[in-house]
Length: 306
Image (cartoon, rainbow, N blue to C red; front, side):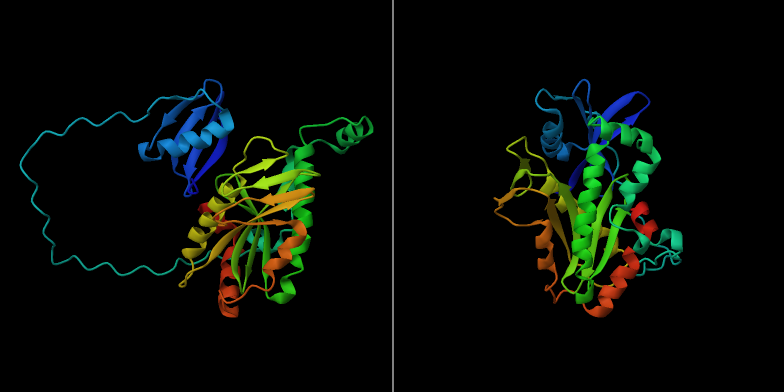
């Protein structure tokens, strides 16, 4: 399931969950209210249903969106198209060129949690509302946002400690589908996508694709981290003449305990202070390649276009 992701969508009175490929192509969607699932690409049906089941539970009803094609009537075979003298062989394509970098497009200016800060400022409660909720000790729908912001800032501080070892760090990379990448590490040990999860005082169990918080229902944290790294590898590969090694990292903040039950270890799983283990890694990118990848990755527009 690593190449599929699930995204909520609300518009025109509809409330859906979309299952997309890494390039944003929708392969299925489900109506939350009725649990009716529409399959757009049949080859992904089983994987899509498994992912949607994690969010909607049992009782999914499949309603194929694409009817089977009518059989084509037999006819005379087509003659192969003959090349003309004006046809020239296609040249091999080189890496794409990055757009001009302006201050407003430079992700190097982002601080840890900057995207959450912007979203809270735009849509969150006012300072008066926050003060009232705090005095009355009332929980609000924004509590999880503030918890996530604290987690991103704490992990960001740990990652910034690795800069003297030759690493470059970017924070809050917004993607075209509305999601974001919490942190991106670029250095001699390769490129790492860092996905931050803050569960204060929790006991966490992590398998190959799922995680459980305090023994609760499985959450696709590891699978989402793997999809995130695949996405980053695809985007950066368009602008580099060399292979860019990208690995996913899942970091838990403020937890009481962490049990790693993975068998494949395709995702690195750390507590916040353990991310220092990335520092000594080397042998994947030269200093020149690090500089090139960082110069590409800091362009906000390349992620929004992907």
